[in-house]
Length: 295
Image 1 (cartoon, rainbow, N blue to C red):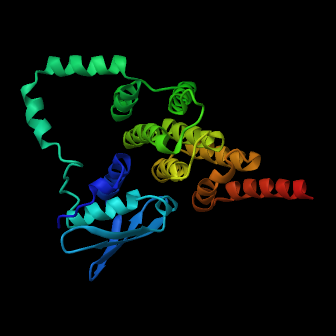
Image 2 (cartoon, rainbow, N blue to C red; image 1 turned 90 degrees about the horizontal axis):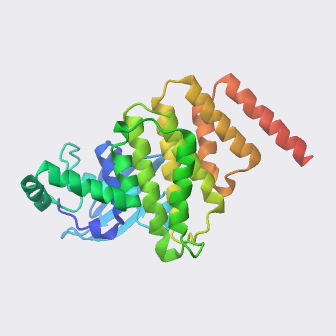
Image 3 (spheres, one colour; image 1 turned 90 degrees about the vertical axis):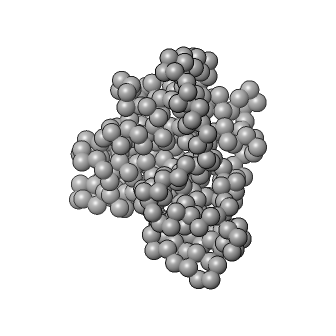
């Protein structure tokens, strides 16, 4: 089914939705006349409804995720890719058709492409980040202090000289976060778990004090992306060391109220992934401490 929808989404949202579709995250799709419904599995299970007319035009879209209150979200995009490809995950159509580039690249020599990429890497900091996030498995392991510096510098650049991210400039922040999330997911794919946790936790820690006009829900989008990375680590990693590190960070942030309004997502992770006695007992101690403070 041909559906006219890609122009309705930001590029970063399309990419995330397409990844969800490829990861087989769309389930229980049903149709009632022109209305399609489906469940999309992310940090939680989200219900998506989309109305499409007979010409493939979108008439209405709804999702119960927080980001969809103000924007078209990745869960909507995931369902649309599913519908357009009749649920066939192996049918990997490209986002925003680039078939013509394939033929052009075939005509260019390997050395020309290498020189072009190196030139762009040396002159463009954003391209450096994107290149690294995509090919992170070929780089040496990065210490936490380097991630701290890189993320801090990236956010400083997004804020700019005015010291504030205006409503019409929030893409600067969300785009840089998308690159870091891609890097984190590529590391997870190659069974590296500590660095992705650092990336997600460091970005989350920046949110409470970020000078940004968040009318479009950008920080909610960022929070959900970071929590999703941490949840993916907890699902895939078998190391008790990493799990303990994540638990310690979550409990410390809750105890010290480090994340403020952005702590809901990580608190839900406690309930789902830290149910062993040693973790429950530690949480009870923190709760007792809070009760004593209130007294």
